[in-house]
Figure 1 (spheres, rainbow, N blue to C red):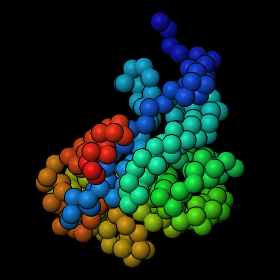
Figure 2: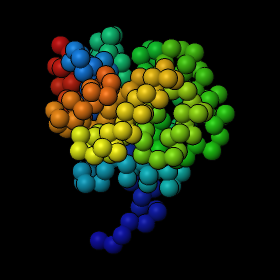
Figure 3: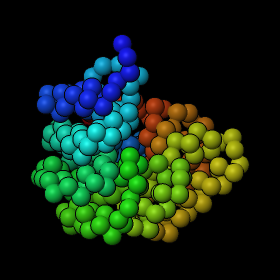
Figure 4: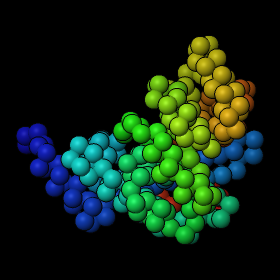
Length: 244
């Protein structure tokens, strides 16, 4: 079989959109002091070879002009699960700036947007910061929250924070995985936590895989985290067992 061309990619994505072939999974976000699940991050899984990761699916969608449609479908399928999640547990979803700016975005969040945190993804750069701020205003007005994802992975994150004034900052996995063995990374993480405190944003560490990483994160003041050590992304019924 030869390499996939744009037409093949387009047809593959259209089939997913037509048949709603996205399976959501849910990973817990945990309060470290208590072990309490405060929210689930919803992630998308696609049909076919698991090695063809969700990031590649979304990148393909943007490359053929279907990025917003695919992200909105993912949001809609996740929001359908919200009534089954206990009211004290929030839900984080991923969306890029063009999707947030889509006129139907708030409609896709359903009737409980105050329980939703929108994590800004890095699929596309932010070109219009003031436009993004305006697009996020209805979410804030409805009581929803905003998070900057993968903080510490690049300069673009600083642009996001300046423009968005987020409720949450998520430390990138590259920081988490090196925090206990690299003094420079440890110092950077500590500074980022202090910065988040100064702007009244909560901090969530991503990609926690060991108890040693947890200890190092708590030492610098991180109160919330997610990762395989705390809970795998799983179907909703399995995820709910963690909060039962």
